[in-house]
Amino acid sequence: MKIFLGPAGIPSTSKKSGTVSGIERVSELSLEAMEVEFVRGVKMGNDLAREAGKTARRLGVKLSVHAPYFINLCNPEKAGDSKKRITDSCERAHHMGARVVVFHPGYYGSLMKVEALEMVEKACREMSALLERRGWNVKLGLETTGKVSQFGTVDEILAVCERLKSCVPVIDWAHLYAKHQGKADFRGILSEVTSAGYRKIHTHFSNIEFTEKGERRHLTLESRQPDFREVARVILAGDLEEITIISESPALEKDSMVMRKVLEGLGHEF
Image (cartoon, rainbow, N blue to C red; front, side):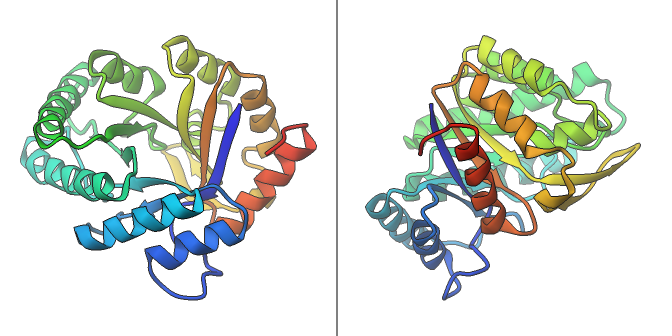
């Protein structure tokens, strides 16, 4: 199994600000991946995206993109702007050679869950058509979410992905831990994903604080909520060819390196 580890965003120890410097720092730390964060808005031009992609390819760093947080495909009044934010992210991802754009699909609001599923599928179908017309070799990465009010259970994500091959599941282990109130069956979740045919997957990991409503805030790996060693055992025992694990810990690259040590301790060779 190939495992790619890296931070969500520019490492805090990067010598300079900016995505290119962040990629260079990831490589210096012997990490293999970085997620470019557009979570506050898509402010990168295509020229910089191409430069970032060139640097990543030269250094062997695998890139992904996280689209803005301000997305709700389940709300007719917000779906148009939400699709624009996602496809703007896809355009930059295409130019930098990132193959997945991650996003939180939306909130149920007053909708029944089946209605929310239909709206997310419709929006993803429309975005997929645009990506195909533009020739952008990018997958729409629907992320499992951490709040009870959010669309994004494993079953919901897989349902959309089963219908649209342009979509792929993104498993956020911490979100599922919070959504299931600390009782997520990680082994069962991974089995469900691989049984659906996904053996190369993109994931996020951190520890997390939660309430009865779900996630509250991300924590460092020291809190062991959930314990990465347990998740690592599930991953190593799973039927996977490849997995990317993006650290969303407040200690971005530091906890990526902690994960690396845990995996090495369990017998994985990088």
